Length: 269
Image (cartoon, rainbow, N blue to C red; front, side, top):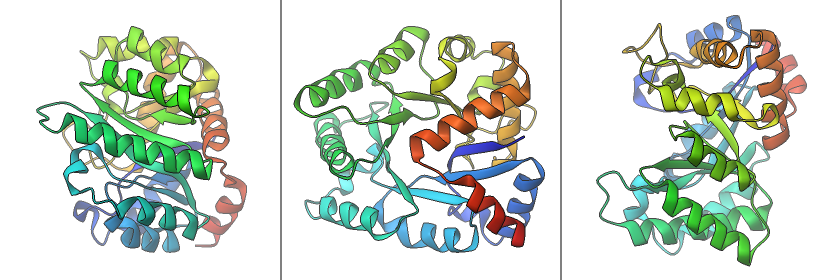
């Protein structure tokens, strides 16, 4: 069995000095590849340093919507340059809209639009963060699609209801479920996990956040993506092995991953 955690933040201080033990645990859990997201371009150096140690790590570059106030005009060329600088960069992200307690809505939209243009120029998928902004995001993406060809991507750590899920499926997106799907009261997320077609389904931890049951309340880590996989498999009434195969194939297709090479290199460590 092979699992891929499509959204991690291993460069956060909470993981300091634990890369060897973390990687040992995720390999034991049969996690064969990870995609490291990026909150702001300034993280790129630290993320790349982790990837230099972990052959099964791909990564992204972008500016998170909660950091949209940090945007400067020159950041667009910086993100473009960084994305082109390393073949392990497989996406632009995480980008998106977060209207929860937001007072910079227009700025978030402008920053997202510019990063969508970068993804379109590079023909790379996007990793989308969306909180309390599904309708606005749908409208913006439809507008972008009308001016450009569609950009591929994933709605990460998805928490929307089934109607919202269908909006983004109709736009061509993959949907990725995190530990939220294991929570007892996450009924709408679990309903969404049931309707996503098998060829658009992804799993993630979003570690160190949102540890799944039975680890809820603890620091999350990539090995725990197995609990997410087990929960989604149960919801969809398929075996864990089937769910693993589907989500791994989907991750490889979206992010153009060559996990066989990475596995061989990881086994040498």
